[in-house]
Length: 294
View (spheres, rainbow, N blue to C red):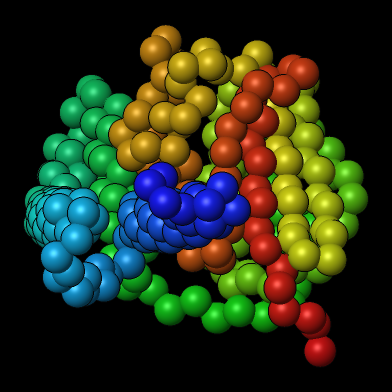
């Protein structure tokens, strides 16, 4: 290094190395911050924060990240609008069908033909389907007000079972455990009713529906298992989609009940999933219980 002494050359190299290390650390920190920014946006869907335009090596990357945010937000807004339109269309069609079905039922009763009972049964099935659709769409649109209070979970389950037992004779209900939960009792009853109905439809007379209730300091867990042998693994995640029915299913259900359950549980800030248990399909509710009972 010219006329520099070895000591001065070493010192200069040390300063240069330190400067390079600091520059690399700063660059790495900025890259991590940017990566965290993108990850946070993609995971939470939050609104984009404006970048300041800087004339440095990361400016193109910042601009690309900002463009990505804008594109993702526009796509999400478009999807939300399409979902709103689809929900409104379903609700409108369902509402418009109620009056013609009522008239058709009346004409069948007056006509008294040979197939009157079967015709009325099918009309009533369509009426139940329409009612379920309207309820589901209002749930999806936050059209119902939920009133939360503390309740024992077991009586809510038993009340739902009592309303189903005459329709599914020969099935048994087995409940294990107990739990105090903060919920809207009416809507939790609706959720349990649809879960139990699904379980009964897949449990033959003489079989049992098993319900486990558990409460920890922070959460409520409910497991419900039938005797139906379970579902194909590829169908488990789709069971909560509206109108989805597993291939080969022989029940008359329209595939709306579990979709309603999911909406109700999500309104309670919880989640529900399905897995194959020891004897049949198992539905598992996980609901946070953050507030303390006064």
